[in-house]
Every structure is written in structure tokens, then in C-alpha cells.
Image (cartoon, rainbow, N blue to C red; front, side, top):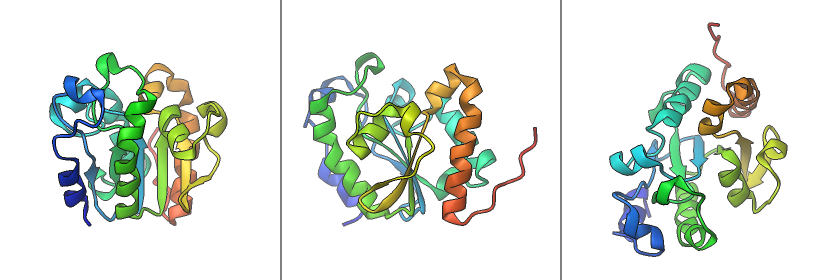
Length: 189
């Protein structure tokens, strides 16, 4: 089974009520054998239009974290979301929507076989860790998802509203680079 065949299995998915309001299914993007995988919440408006995860303002910030902060390219990592269709008005995904999509995310993770997963935001962290603990308590602390080291951190959209917390995400990113055995790039201030 490959990511392509998994996407084909999804088809024109109607497994939950989000199917009626979406333009596209936002499956995932990146290196199918990436050592590092990012998991976010779900697609927003830009993502729904383009069919790619993290392409709006939050996506630009995630790209900066990957390229400037980590010294990697977006094509080096794999990026997916818990849910693959945009909820109306970007509301939080509901339990039945998560239940419909979660098997696809679990299979994506199993196929990519990352060495490290970064859960972006409360929602991704809580779904992957089956936890109700707030992201402020989860972030920066290593956990595990099916035997894969998982680092929860703040979502880029949160950082757009709370730029002072970028330093906390930088601390988390350094732990991820260390776990992957990668050098921490010298950052210009």
C-alpha cells in the first residue's frame, strides 16, 4: 500500500458531513518517506481551494519554521492534518468527523514511517495522544504515537496571534532537530 493508493481508497469521500461543504480533499503533501512529519488540525479556506495543507498565512509561518528554523525544505518533510476536509467557518472538527478521518491519518503515519512527528496545536496533539490535556501543558514534552516520538507544539495560526510564543516553538524545534540528529541552523536575528 502506498500513499497514492490510500488516497484512491478515500475516493470522493462522503464518510462524514464535511463532504458537503468542501471544495477539495486535502490529503497531505511532501516526502513519502520523510523522517519528520507534521500533523495539523484541518484545512482552512486557502487549503480547501488549493488542495494542499498549510498554504495560507499559518502555512507560510510553518514553511519558515521548516526552512529557516530547521534548515530543511518543505519537500523533505511530510505534512498532513487530522481531518482532510475544511469544517464550515474553520470551526473545530467534531468527534464524528475525527472518527471518519482518523484511520486515514493513522495509515499515512504508518506508510511514511517518520522518525519524529510534530503535532501542531491542541487539536492534533489531543487526537494523536488521546488526551484532554491543554497544549500549553503538552508542548515541549516528548510523547509517543504508535512507537514514534511525538513533539506537541503550538499551531502556527496560534503564533500569528501570539508572536511572543515563537520562542517556545523554537525550543521545541531544537529538541526535534536534536532527536533527528540534525544540526541546529545558525539563525540571523
